[in-house]
Image (cartoon, rainbow, N blue to C red; front, top):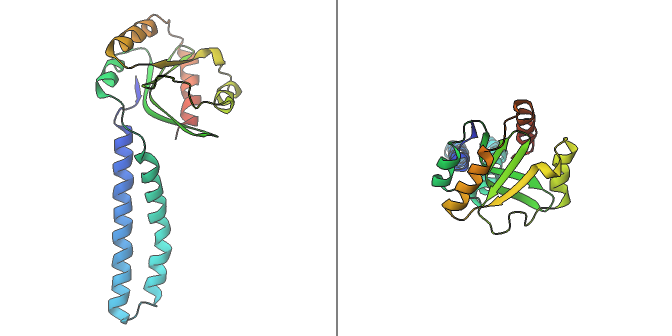
Length: 184
């Protein structure tokens, strides 16, 4: 079951960009209206427009936070989506003390969590804080698997291994709940 789609990042970027443009338009409209009515920039309209920049700043910051991440490979995502008895998350960002860690794909099956990335070293940049988040929620470090895929063949081998895992519904759902609590 797909829990987070492959185009999640693109949707979030578009959403926050549109909200940023709307806020900017409203602020400019209020400021210009006040300037036209009073023939002076120092008026209550300017104060209202200045307060509204908080909403603009919030949405612009959220947009900029997502711009450094790319959507996952659509072909890989389509292959992963064919898993029937696993929970699938695409474009997952998990905050850590050293910065946010991006995983193009995460698959939950039984009590195992597979973090799939395109990097050569999938655990690069992960500190003890990252793992302690999971162990604090009752997920053992041995249940976290980090996989690097560069070719479709690597993905096919990994998916074959994941299909061989017998599903445990209760563990899978509780792990999904924990993971969703950590995601940005």
